[in-house]
Image 1 (cartoon, helix red, strand yellow):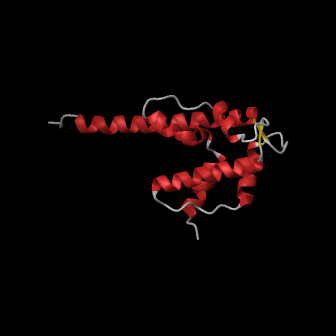
Image 2 (cartoon, rainbow, N blue to C red):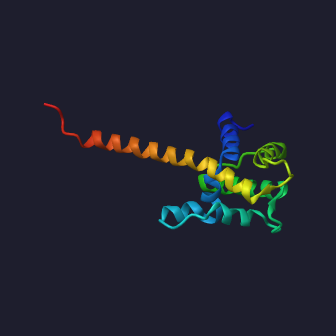
Length: 143
């Protein structure tokens, strides 16, 4: 049985992963760590749209998300969580805002843009906390 934390991580990761999509796509995180450009949401969309029809189907979406979860599990040394297809369908439907049965490039990019500010805010908050912590360590003792 999956822990509550794993379930929440999956749900949040699936529903709110605009930046993760780019990070995990073909070594995006590794590229970013090396100072290289991350793939754009448009570039990521093209690789997710396996049949090139201009829309990500539920099958393409599910296969990609499962592959990402396996990659993350391998990187962390933990077993990939078991996620039911119905859970992927719920997330897919949330991304398919016009309910056309496929995620268009516009929907994909819009979803990525919505999540980018949150990721940037979190990163900025961590940097600020680290700077404050480092400042305390370097401060001279009060006399």
